Image (cartoon, rainbow, N blue to C red; front, side, top):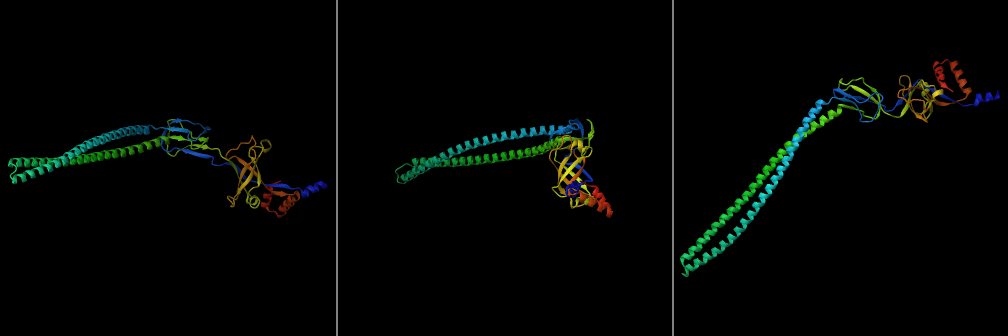
Length: 366
């Protein structure tokens, strides 16, 4: 009796607050897959329960119309590329011809200038000769015939010099004309190239759009995970744009969301407290239980309840499944009391007749 009395007065017993409702929550666990365009189903490449990697094809929609557009635009693109290559070759020939013609004219012009310089030099010499004959004629030391012959030779040389100057001017004009014709031809080639490049850019844009449309006709898994739901579709069925086809459940951390009456949560449940999680339908005596820690306590009441979020700790019993939305019951250790204190609290609640206290006490487990 003494031992029992000592136990009754000083033994500390952990008290737990029990949740009204709780469930397991998998973070970022589901992604819905919907069609981007209307199309007819031509192949189904996945089935419910498959584990998929990101990018795996679930459903293949008809791409015949896009394939025709893509084939036509590809041929047009090839034709435009051939035209661009032809323009490049034409410009290379034009550059080569211009360089050769300009070099030939430059050589001819250099020769004409040398001949002109020689003629100018000879003309000066012949002018001196004609002047000497004229002075000798005035002194009657030479015949008039010699003077006239010298003067005629000088005039012929002057005429040849003028002809040479005219030929130099014509060569320079011809060289300038060839340069202008080259620039004009080059401008025309650049204009044709720009027109073809503009058409090629338009075709490339259409090809990219067609490729994007073809890719959108393949419904792929956006994440790695398990195919949790799959619409009942058949090959040949037409799916509308925006129609949901599948749901993929990805692997993520499992947390616990529990709801408590405000009287049990406010002032009693705090971050860091330990808790026990028992899954509904799985006897804890047979399958074991989970252990958790309080991570966050909501500061506001929602639907007459307080949300408490917990994270799992320790090893998970091998027989317990961790599935999203699995119902559970959470027991959070809120403190310690002696049997004597628990008895006094119960008696006080009964004497005051407060129903809320009776309900709360019913949720405090030693």
